Length: 352
Image (cartoon, rainbow, N blue to C red; front, side, top):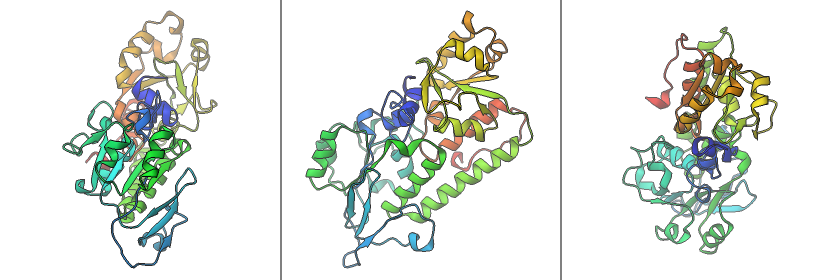
């Protein structure tokens, strides 16, 4: 797997999301970008709404008017099957992944975010460096650090160290953990945004964020419609390619390309022989792995490959390509610009 960008990508999917989520690609891809240990989404409960009827939410992602009405106490099941009860609207939220770092800053005021991940301040992996400036950070493997800020909501990932989860649970901190299967597509990311929005009591903002994502992608798809769709391979120095059920597969498709590795399931290691057989028109990699593309360009075994022969090797911004938040639309835009340089593309709203 690739280091970070790809590495992260590879965790979520084991994907760039990985980092975001926590894997070699945990290193970057995925909601849990940051560190393997810091990529779990957990939720804590407390803050607002005394005396209101206890509400049990079976669907945190419904767009119905009923689902838009938030009340506390709220009881939900997280993606790991654990029951989570929020007594009040969360006001001291701890984020355990870069994905939730990025989602939270668009949904709640800074004053409600008690901790973000250490990756949130790294521009190579994060899209919210400026927004989180001044917010304390944690690595994700020190439950005492999280407990010290008295969180009423912790967002964690299912892969996080069990001892960390156990200590937070024992301390009575409500946690919402996202499953590793929740970051395999842009649709998954949209669902996660809606889930976080419901948990923090901001469903309208979450719905608007997802609506903007859909509009941005529709605009990009319209701009490249009717143009030839080049074949594309996402490949990095760890030797892994992004197949179906990865956010990268969606990114390539929505950007007007055809993923030559779509027949693979998730992230799979491939050989030079496979690349020659696929003969992609374009090869992309994350910008933190850009030096690898230079090696590909001079690799004797790949000189017959169209992308190599015609110098169609492109480094895509790592923070975008590995994103498992609303910023994934930037990756669609970035790749579309590479695949269709003459298309009239409008910058996504998230870039405004």
